[in-house]
Length: 174
Image (cartoon, helix red, strand yellow):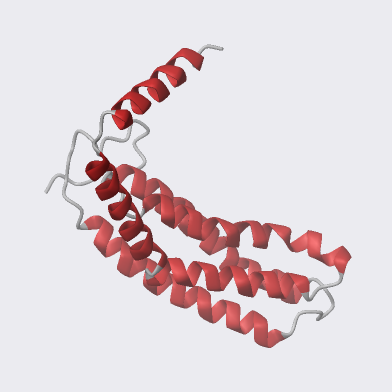
């Protein structure tokens, strides 16, 4: 395979680097990783992502089996929020954070507009209170997301690392 040597070289290099670390360095890295994971899982946006997933799961599970498949894209979008946040959290590369944020935004918008599908299709099988709850939580998600974007835009600028060869994410120099 074309990339096999590159992947093996990377893994070999990483394994050699790791083997050369002292036990204290490894323990410190493990401690930092646990601390970062704890911060991420306690972040309000991460928690809200999981709440939204639980709401969507409950709504879909309340539907007759033949209708559940029709709404599976809603579940798929709800499942994307937390992992994309996790991929962006503590990342110091603005461009990678923005890529994950854009994907999160897409799926959040899909969930918001998709609530109409619960009312339009399914002959009223979904309790309107749950649809209202999902809409409310999506508004809360958007508020938290906007606050997080303020943190993202405050990241230090590194114009070499922030370059987007596709021209989608362009960071102002000022």
